[in-house]
Image 1 (tube, rainbow, N blue to C red):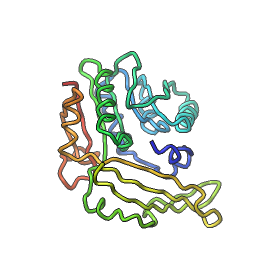
Image 2 (spheres, rainbow, N blue to C red):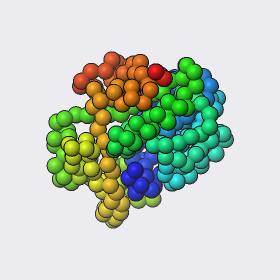
Image 3 (cartoon, rainbow, N blue to C red):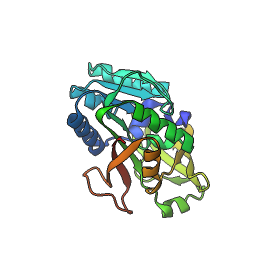
Image 4 (cartoon, rainbow, N blue to C red):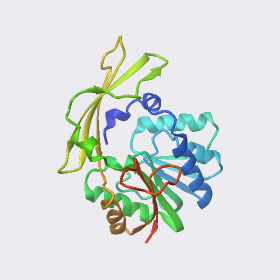
Length: 250
């Protein structure tokens, strides 16, 4: 995982605000399933805390201690009980099963090797109760965008934000794509007028192509039930921005 990118959890939340359609989707999935909920790569709890507020027993597993600290703070601020566990989604054993397991916001793409992806998915399979669902969302790779990752630093439209301590923060990104391993390697630059490049952090994400994903799931003992192309439930097509997958144990 690109640890430095997640070293300032509050900055991360300001960088990626909102996300209400995704939160609503996962809350609806939890309501449909009932019972216990596990999120892998839970970050600062942006999706899990609202699910816990609906009355579901929730567990969040996260590798970054900084993100977990912020998740605990936010849950405590709302007087919500959530079990926060520091752990690696590649290989985990919580000693019990869950009615809904999910991996949101491209978190699965931090696993670059096929062996790590399969180990994660097999661990998910081992934690599914009878009738449980596993849900994940990852971006749908855009070949034109990947081909345009030329290493040139550019300001990323729509990602500038206001920081209460620093003022306006501009975000520049330089990316290259390694087709041999399907990994985009980026360097993110965070700057203000007074503090250029106050944070420079690498971020590397794997691409999982549409024909590849069902095979990975199958090899892990999971079956793809539905794949949507957006949060409204539109059927997945080649030009969809995301792959939103609902799975069950095979």
